[in-house]
Length: 301
Length: 309
Image (cartoon, rainbow over all chains, first blue to last red; front, side, top):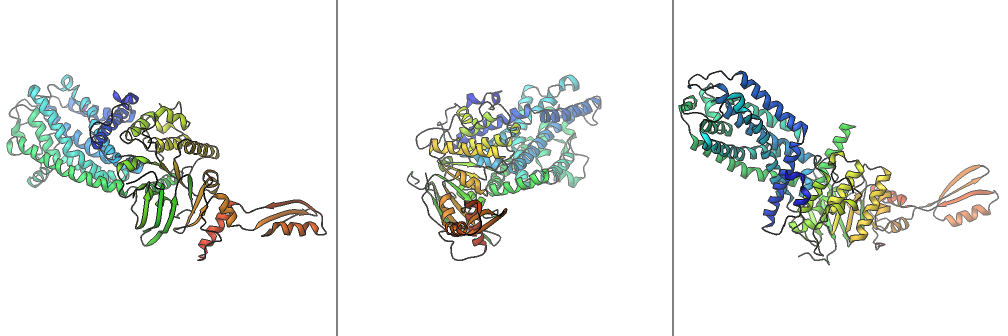
């Protein structure tokens, strides 16, 4: 783990490339360091383990439940892509939203703003750390899967490559949403009602455990505007055996459309997030932080 | 283009208001170098002034030059020359001290200082601020005094020409406060860094600063060395004595004449003591005059006195 040997890395030659590229590299290093902190944090590891194990236990009790309408498909097999999509959705929206709101409040954002190109470094670092933060949950779900729940992948090595591609595209589509939510909320206490609640509702209606074919028609249409549905759809098209498309809305795979919708969300998010982030960091000042410190001390006292 | 000949800070006619209330109402001062304390009652606009100098806040009107550049439009190379010590309390709690300093130091690597030096080496810096041996500790485990030292180390890591500190000793106990003052003097003496700090603690300003700017009601109402301020606002001296077992106290502008007549009087005088106006008296007088709305400036204030240094 490179995060444990930071002294060695400060010697890296800095003058190659543009200052912006240098700031991006520093941001990557920051993100890796923060991922290291996460891996050594009992709370973070414990949270991932509890949720991951709970999902696995539930699916294990359903391991023999056959899915109606698809030959030999079990409920866990059908559910896996949606669960992976929800992992990305939850991790990549709530992580950055809480992270950003917390780090505005505790002065991290301002601290970085006081250093050269610090806002770039901070943004890249935060995004990198949050993206890496999904890896433990994916590992907890996928590594024991073959031993507990059978084959998670019906399309071989190419399927695994496509799965990684879907996860990356999904991250790109969803992570800026988290940044936008965090920037709009501005403080952690607002993230729960304005950030968590919509994401939870969206996750349920988008069909975490399978295609949302149980919804009324208008709701099916609405769900198809959001990235979670298309990420789950794309992942199902990659992991499930032939014939499973019969379970989808419209009874067919639409991987091209899924890529388009996810890419559109990614572009919109990557345009909006930096603007909101800049507004947030410029509004942020020591005076505002001192006022919050005062409020914090009064609460603590 | 900024040059080394520019004064560290030049402020002229600075104005700022929030919601119609003028917080800064024509603030003007220059800081050529040394250690300058910006002193004033709570709400006087100290933090606002500092934030404008740091480029964190936009001003409403006036001219501001910090190291020869306008902070609102200054580039990243300028940012690298200004050290900022925040009133922080819990950022980067999970980071190890050395890890954090290494990360922040690296940001200064593309911007060498005037002498061509890169950022400070972490271990040397930790030793300098009295944190040697705790580099592997997590930031959240530091005491208040250690944390403040780390904040100063972060402010100094890029070898800034100007170090700006906002209420650096708020919340420190007297021992930690004294250590902090010593640290600040060492840094200034060794590197010639210009320092601007805000405080509402007069004793602190007197100990640390070559020069004190008093900000009250949105204006600089006094400007000078601690000695000059105390002298030029010369309040009355106090004469205390004991006569026939009773303590007496008398305020006078002529303590010598009063003492002479006292000693020449019929009663035997014991424990005669004269107390001259101190900086605290001067400061309270300056603020009092200002708040009383006296349009006439206080005698000698604003005063312009060359720094001791």
